[in-house]
Length: 127
Image 1 (tube, one colour):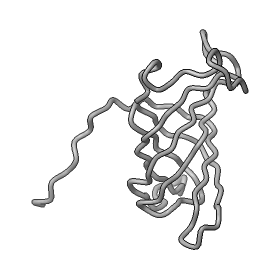
Image 2 (cartoon, rainbow, N blue to C red; image 1 turned 60 degrees about the vertical axis):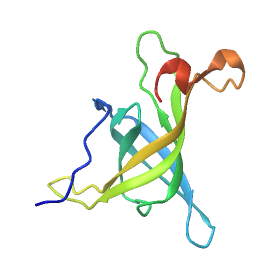
Image 3 (cartoon, rainbow, N blue to C red; image 1 turned 90 degrees about the horizontal axis):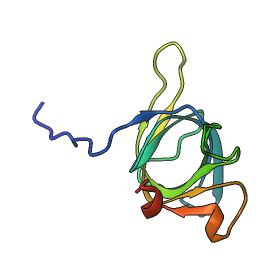
């Protein structure tokens, strides 16, 4: 095995949270899916879902964070990125999954669109 393997640059945090995602297929038709996050880090997320977009696809998503101390109930991560890899179902649970490398990331609190309800990625250090 002489293939170079990409080394991880960010620590992954296990987080199971609901996620919705969407992308345009090759003919420009919008596709949508939903699933659960497996883990998340400052540069991306791994999604477990029955529908997986193809590798290289530009994708947008909203991941709804669980209620934790210091965060309001409808806090979510919104991002745009690219599908890096797709994993076929394996093991007993038989779930497919895919990794997303994010380019733009926001932490949004409730449905507010003003400065108080939105933290840019730089302020929150997601990316």
